Image (cartoon, rainbow, N blue to C red; front, side, top):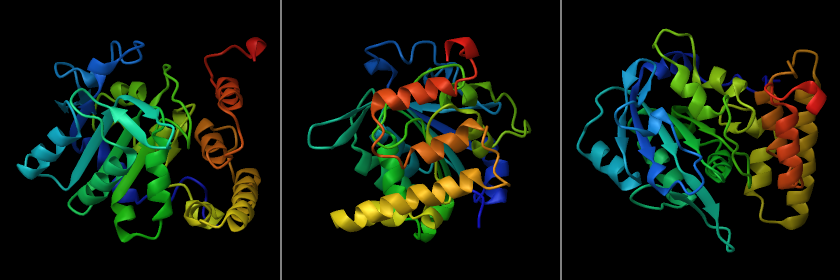
Length: 275
C-alpha cells in the first residue's frame, strides 16, 4: 500500500522551488488584515527560494502573462493569496485585486497550465479545498501528474494564519538548494491538503465522484476507514501535522468549530497546558 503522502514525482518535488514564480494577489481586498505584512504579495519583496516572483492582480493577468510566453522554463510555481468565500448556492470565489474567479475557473486554468508546464500551485485562501476536490475527482487524469496542488484549507473549511501556514513557510525558503519541497512544506503546516496524498487508493476520489446518496455514504465510510488504516499502520508517522490534515479533509461531518479546535490542538505554538 502506498504511503499517504509520498506519491509525488521525485524529480518534480526536488526542483520545484527553483522554478519560475508568479503570485496572484488579493492583498487589496484584505478586509480583516489577514494579508498584512505578507512579503509574497508585495511586488517589491516577493521571493521564493531566492528567486524574484512576478506579482499580478488577478487570474486574468496570469493568463495574459502565460499567453505572452513570459515563462520559459518547464516548471512554474504559482502562489494564490486571497480571501475566499462560499455563496448559498455552493459557489466558491476567490477575491483577488482585479477579479473574482470561481474555484471551477481556477482549477480549469491550472489544469490547462499543467499541459504546458510542471505546475506547483499553492492556494492560500479559505475554501481553497474546493479546488483540491476538483483535482481529486480527476485523480486518474494524466495531467494530474504534472500538477502539484497545495491548499491552505480542507474541504468546506476556513484557513488559519499563523507562523507555520503555507505562505509563511514559502516566504522562509531563501535559497533554491535549501532542500525544501512543496511536500516538505506541507508536512510542516497545521492545516490544508496536498494532491500527492493517496486519494484514489483510500476511496476518496470515488466518494467525491458519486452522485448517488447511498453509494456516496458507503464510499465515505470506506474512505475514512482506509485513511484511518494508513495513518495507524506501523510505518506511518502519525505525529506529523500534515498527515493529520489529510485524514481530516475527508471527514465531512466535522463542524468548523471542531475542525478549528483540532487544528489548535496540533499547533506547536500553543502551549500544552492551554490544549
